[in-house]
Length: 30
Image (cartoon, rainbow, N blue to C red):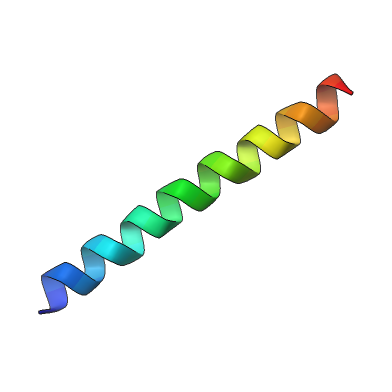
């Protein structure tokens, strides 16, 4: 149970960091 919750949490974290980095890169380029 907890392993699944932790996996989901980490996955969301990775996705959020990637999205945030992409937006930041766009800001720098613009």
